[in-house]
Image 1 (cartoon, rainbow, N blue to C red):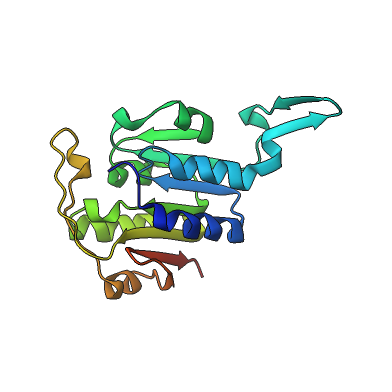
Image 2 (cartoon, rainbow, N blue to C red):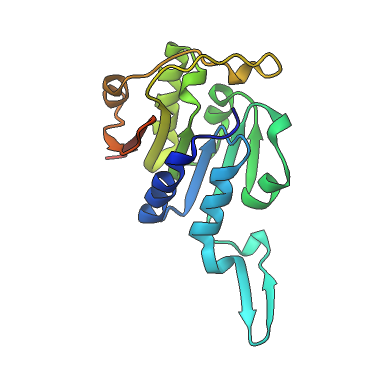
Length: 188
């Protein structure tokens, strides 16, 4: 679905805060929760300007952190996305990512890998590593969860990923979580 387990949110946001990326690509933004949390936790005080007894919200053009997203299902996009993201690229990640013109300090792929057949998922992991300047973080359920959404086939679960497969793909740092593999790739 367009959101993820609440049990992994603090781990993922804590990792972002520890790395302080200046640019983020969020693949499969869904409801936009990670874009919003990254914006508020990383941009922090720069979101507003306070001078004496007056305050104003800074314009996006004044923000320091670039947060772009990719979303295959435009029906999920809301005003949260307009606020949180600099740019949203609509379409299948396998087609959109190669067309992007920049790299990112951090690439997020949270609860999307299981939506791809294995060969496409392996290709996605390679594309993520190509776009990543420093770190990439993904999460995927530890157990296969059957899911079919007729209204949005992008939500169907098509694969299950093991720790061994993630490590083989270069995502060797594993962050603690009971329900999901939260795996990190660090560019050498």
